[in-house]
Length: 346
Image (cartoon, rainbow, N blue to C red; front, top):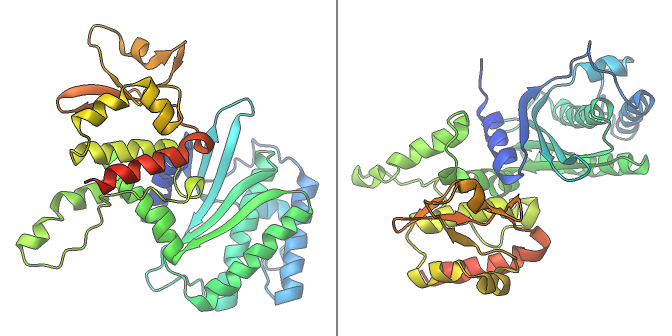
């Protein structure tokens, strides 16, 4: 089975930066087993989108194919991710197509390249609406390199595509992540998280981890040093647009511990509830010392709910549990300020 490195990167991004518990690469519908919901809306939206871009920009998205149900059945999404939880089940869904062309995104002519990207995004949105019966989702086309001649008109067309969907009451969010956005919002985030992930099935992560084993050897060999490892995950990342607070907290503590940054005084303070409330605006201590005489399940739970991550962190020879109950809107700015303070003093 061929593994695309871009797809592996997106799998890690969805799992660890977007908190998706369910991620599948190369998702396809089961056309013989699954019903299509909202079939009339799906057909109308695909037809309206095709006619809009053909009439305004002379772009032929669906090549005059009149069978929109057949087009939907042919859908394939490079990476599909779901964040599941709460009363509503699916909190967020992501459908991502990723293209890694070293010489810049190219599916042929400029018009053909733009048409194929728009076609992919429309079909992904309609697959979510048709097979999952969802009226909203995040549709992303990601590519590390797109030249301005394609990127600039494509960005405009994607903005118009989103407005076209919103006019019909469909709240899908269409986004192009390329060039610096791809680097800052995807690549840098995943490489920063690589130290805290040990899943050998995540090939992009494993390749970064292997590279980091030997990166320092370049200096001894007199070769230019190109460091992929992100020693600091910036505290001013753009919130949920880049990395969610739970992933940021875990990655940051992994880095602080591995770099031996936390002082004994700070470790003591992090175990106090009053310090947690004042410094992070959370209702549980940040760290909890592991007691070997008590079961791990009992130590993680507070009032019957797990409020600490399952895997202990070893600091100066002692195991601690890290609080897992972080709310973006309540604690993000507090954690950012604390992390900046810790980094600035080291």
